[in-house]
Image (cartoon, rainbow, N blue to C red):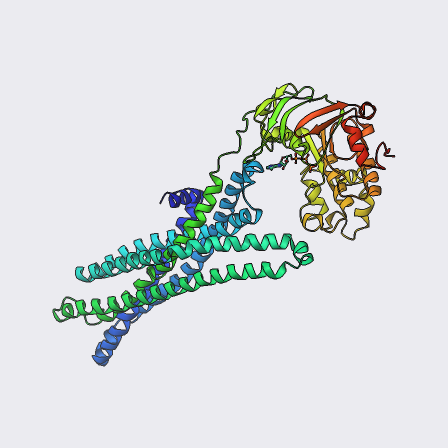
Length: 587
Ligand SMILES: Nc1ncnc2c1ncn2[C@@H]1O[C@H](COP(=O)(O)OP(=O)(O)OP(=O)(O)O)[C@@H](O)[C@H]1O
């Protein structure tokens, strides 16, 4: 139940939209009920007046009931239309509200708190599960509220004529509107929940398969993946078939109860006509009225049948949204930073779930304005240093000071304002070059974008494209070459204009000539900034004020490039394995 309460609380900002939709739905049902009941009475009384001969027919007032029928028919159509408009508007607002609420919960968790989830799974929760949650408003909450009110009002109308008819109608509507939905809910709960999980699994597989399409094709693993997807699809179809059987059963049950109600009401009403308590033309009014009244509850079993699916979707969303923050974030304004120096003393960082430290007692100092390289073999902990600095992951012990203040005392988003990052993994969104640049500075003018592109040596390429800044770069920048993508990342960093520049293996994967050109093009960006250059290559190191060599999470050597070369320690070990790059100058 608490899951449903939480959902209702989330819907609360749209209470007036929801109530508006519910009232219109109520008006539609009552109009339908009124239309059928009045038509029944009208037809019967007109027929009876006809049987009474010409004189009676002349005395019979056709106009009032005919106007009533027309009024009910009109309000039914108009209120149905308005109800659709309002509930759809409410639905879209609720969807937007739920998605932004969920996103606001996801953001502080990333990346440390989300590393246990697959991206396809998160996507599935954000899109499909939230769509399912919306059913709660559209199919459960509103219809149930409306059914309750409509049952009371329609039974109340019958009570004007005879209490026993009112009680019978109330009991039939209450029993069918509660028992059948509850039965459908019990029957459908398991399959519904399983369907939510299986559909999510299916989406995760599809996303994974699409992302790794190249590998699958290369290694001929496509048929196996297809086979796995088919198995999942079969499992989903099985649950769908079960749900369809339950729907069929509850529809039949509802139709049976509706017909039974007509019979019972007629059986109860006939003696009242004989006794003179009711007129003969009231009988069709009750029969058709009962038929109309079932419209109020007819959709409830289906809604409740899918409640298991909705509950599972809610649980999947709340379980992520309620995840504890991977580490506490500082609140309030960031400490005042005069000089953005960095000092690390005996810093230990271990990733969640990992058995060993990625940084195992790092000591290093980077003075504001200096250019520092961190060199190390793969897995040495270089990127972990950047993760620490950007507060993507927290350190467990040691001192890490930025501008003389402990890193932990900075709210993460305010700390990140000091840094621009260019890395081999700098992500390009599947949108235009313009939008990809605006990520760094949302209010940048067009002229500023062109300047940044010029500084990143990408201006002529973008100008040569028919769509210029509006060229779509494709998913992950697939339509650009490796070098061009990195240059977009440089242009972003230029736009951000942060005092620190973190270069995390920025030229990784480029051919030697492009790499040289790329590192050369980085020079203007480095000028006047504090630079942390993370690399496992020797190219460009001679331009650095200091080089730290990292091994198994510790700084094992430091000095200028020339000093370290001369020393013949770890750096010369690297040099041995990097023939042809040692000491090469970027010109
Ligand atoms: N998110 C993570 N969760 C768990 N362990 C991680 C995570 N990221 C890195 N590690 C581990 O931490 C250690 C250091 O990784 P890091 O990425 O810092 O190395 P690196 O020096 O940057 O390597 P490379 O040059 O290959 O990028 C490695 O053993 C790695 O497996």
